Structure formats: C-alpha cells, structure tokens
Length: 337
Length: 292
Image (tube, rainbow over all chains, first blue to last red; front, side, top):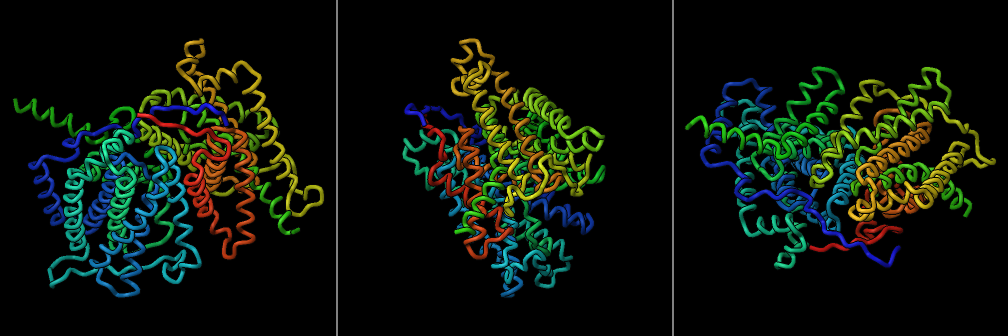
C-alpha cells in the first residue's frame, strides 16, 4: 500500500443523452398508441400473448433505462427484482386470493423497498463494481428462492401456478386479449409517469449525477438520496413488470429468473438505445423474437446470435434504435422536400 | 478443534480454485481497468480445447502446453479484434461487450461439445494427500500450482523488462508512452496472459466440478469475490483472497446452521457486498481518489 494515492478523473460511465432526445414526439406517440390498440383485434391468441410479454419486458427494460440512461448506474441484477415482483404477485394471488390487479402495486412497493435497500450498499460502488455486485445478486437469486426456509411460500424448485384472470364485467374478450389491454393500460401509465419523472427536478438530479457525480454534489444534489431513489424506482417498475409477467405466464419458478434474464434485459436496453425510453420496447421486441429465430436455426444458438448482434450494435449503431430512428426521421424529412 | 483445522484445510483446497480464477481476473483488471465477465467462459473454452486434444490422443502435458499457447493467442486476438476499438468507449459499452463475448463463447462451446457433463483427468491423481482424508493429491497439486504461478508472476513483473513495461503502461499510460513503451500492445499482452492463467485455472478446476459449458459461473462469482476481497489491483491479494474465500465458505458451511451447498452463491454475494461496502479497495488494494 503506497503512500502516494492515485488521482483519477473518472470518465462518465454512460454517455450523456439530452433530455429532449429521451422521448418520442406527440404525433408519433399517437400513431404507435393506435397501432397498439388495434393490432390485437386481428391476430391469433398466441401472438397477443407474445405482444403482452413484449409490453412486460418493455417495462422491465424501461426501468433499467431509467436507472442507467437516467442516473448512470448499472445493473446486471434486474432479474432479481423481476423475480421478487413475480413471486409477490403469485403468492398474494394464490395464498390470499387477492385480486390480481391489487397485487401489482404491492409488488411494486416491495420491490421499491428492496431496490432502495440494495441501493444503499450500491452507493459506494460505481461502474464495474456496481455491475459486479448486481451480477452477483442476479446469480444468487434463484438459489435464494429455492431455499428450504421460504419453500412453504415459494413452492421451492417446483414454483407456483397462477390462475389467469377472466375479462371482467362480462366483456366479450378472450383471457389473453383482456390481459393484453390490462397490461397496455399499465404500461402507458408507467411510461407517462417515467417521462414526467425524468423531466422533473428529480430527473434533472439523476442526469446531473450521471454526467458528473462530484459536480452534481457540489451543486447541491443529494447524491446518495437520488442514487438510491433511482435504484428504488427502477426496481419498483421492474417488480410491477415481474408481477404482470407471473400473471401472463401463469407460472413462477426460480429457474425462470436466472442471470440470463438480467442479461437479456440489459441487452434490450443497449439495443433500444441507452437513455431513449421508447427504445425500451424496441429492445424488448428484440429479446423476445430474436431467440425464437435463433433457436429455429439450431438449439443453443441464441447466446451466440445475441452476442454477435450485440457486438454489431456496439460497433455500428452505438446508440441503438435511437440512432436508427434519427436516421429514419432525417430520410423522411428529405423525402418530404 | 480438529474439525476446525480440517475445515480450514479443506477450505484452502477449494480456495485454490478461486485463487486461480481471481488471478486471471486481476491480470485483466490491471491491464484495462475492467472486470471481464467473460473470463470464466474463456477459461471454460480453453479447457474444452485441452479435453478435445486429449480425446485425439495428445498426452496430458502436451495438451496443457498447446492449450496455454492457444489461450494466450486467443486472448490477444480477442483484444485486438473486439476490445481495442472500445478502449475509449464508456464503461457501459465495455460491459456490453464482455456480456456479448460471454454469450458467444458459452453458446459455441455448447454447439461444439454439447451440454453433457464430461469427466476430466487430473495429472496428480486423486488419492488422499499425506494420509489426510480431507485433501486429495489433486487439491494439493492445485495449491502448489497456484502458489508457483503467483511466484512466477511476481518474478515476471519485478525482474523482467517487459514486466516493468506492463506495470508502467498500467499505472501511467501517458508517461509510459513517452519513454517508448507500446502501451497498446502491453494491454494485448495482459489479455493474453489473463487468458492463459484462466486456462490453467480451468484445467485445474475441471476434474473437481466436471467439464461442461456452464461449469464456470459459480467459480467466476467466487473468483470475483476473491479478487474484490484481496483488492483488484494486487495479484498477491487475489491469491490470498481466494484462499480466504475458500476457508470462509467451508467454515460457514460447518458452523452456521442451515447453510449448505444451496447457499453457495448467496454467500459469495454477501461477501462481495460486505467487502465493497466496508473496504472497497480490498485487503491489498490501493485506494483511488476521484476529482472532477
């Protein structure tokens, strides 16, 4: 241990994204919304199910995006929060017979608390260390869920079966379609809330921390509070997504929530463009549909396809879908002239 | 008391695995300031190569040497092709790159050698070592190799010109460049050495955990835990950390009720977080001061 201490100017962990570049314009948003409302009327139940999963993973990626794109912290441990949310919903539905819709805010709150608590030790960490701690959390989670101590509630290795809700008020819809619209409503609510969060005072604090933590603290931002808050909000949204996921898949088991899920979510964020909220859903589409295609070519290939595509994104379009969208926008602008 | 000594001994034996892995982790961290999440997979792939060579009838030690050479070259190739262009990119991009590498290697190993568990030979034999029931000759050999590796690394970094150049490139890249050190190639060399050390770790671990594409996940987490405990900037710390983690794991399993094999990973998690919170620089690491 040398007497001379290293002095390092740290490069920001994440590239800065201007606040306005984080969302879609009003017109585009409306078009996307109408498309999301109409599409399920024309497709088969299985595709509706996949679209529901897309929205759910989109929410989880969005949560990670708030954490990383917003406050500049990493997490490779989102699968742990997702698992906690899923188990909370499943246990409440199956053991207390609670209405599925009511379990979601509880799942969100519990995950918020869990994330906030985990954010405390994470405060001391930045960059790779944080990635490391969350990576360890994600790998440990399935084993924690399998513990004999919790087995009475979690069903151990076998997991729990969740009943799928029927459409209420006698609406003439299949279960899948109802769940889709239910998920869509929640997704829109959370999306709008997230956009507003990032535009608020707290959002500006997140971004100041992302761009330069020490400068932010010098300007009076309570770094510790906002960093843990970002963790909490992110975990809370992930928890809601997890609860929805449990209802949609009708099943929770420890091995559905491995490090692979965390990696997928991380991948979705990078593909969608870090800090670009709508990109979360592009990323979610990527992580849902690409493995299917890859598995169709050869079993076990999805890891390689993921990896190769991820490298392509890093090298060719480092800003992910955001960059593609901007290029497309410019092209359309030129065509109009 | 006898139980205690036995458990410590057994802990040192498992700790040797983690020490090897931690050594590889620290090597790369020193060269590029990043943790390589694909380190375990790289080691796993090298181990499969050596297994394949032995299947083709190559004798053990030749396969060992060939694998070392292959890993060294492979590590350099990965750095030159994939990570050199990312040197100035934000940490996020680098982490994404490591994860991509993880997926690619894991998936290809599964494609080539499939996911069935394979036996892997040991050169040391597996009879009890010096009549002790807890530690086999293989484990004793593993400890020996780890310590030998550490001594060689120490000699390399302290007494060779190229070792000195690598240290210079890692601590003050600008000044190193001014005195004529090719810092970019020093990083590549660091990758190559880390890959080679990782392959030694893989080859030593494979007889214990058996050979399969996912064999390294748990070991990597423990390797990280060991590296963090020892301090990410110190090879000696990594090895000491590895042994300590092994001992801790065994003692926790013996004396804390309800802690069994199923808690292995949660213990590693708890350990990593505790160390990072209490002493972020680790036992032997240098503290780092930040400025705007």
